[in-house]
Image (cartoon, rainbow, N blue to C red; front, side, top):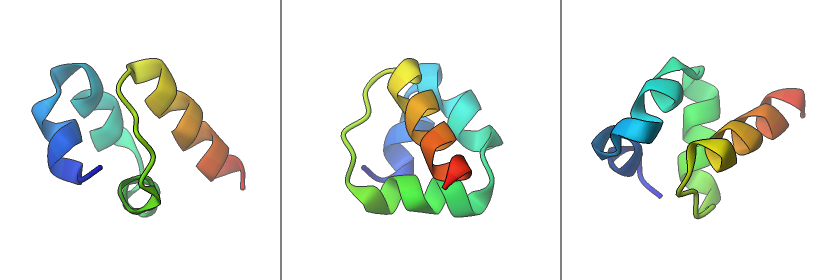
Length: 50
């Protein structure tokens, strides 16, 4: 999903925007279908631990 998706979704925007740019890029390029804040948090934490 593109960064615009996260920016347009108020439930996800604040958290997505708080992530380091490299993690934001990985999430948007991964093609993961993230629709909830919980999924976004899990994905971001996984990427930051890798």
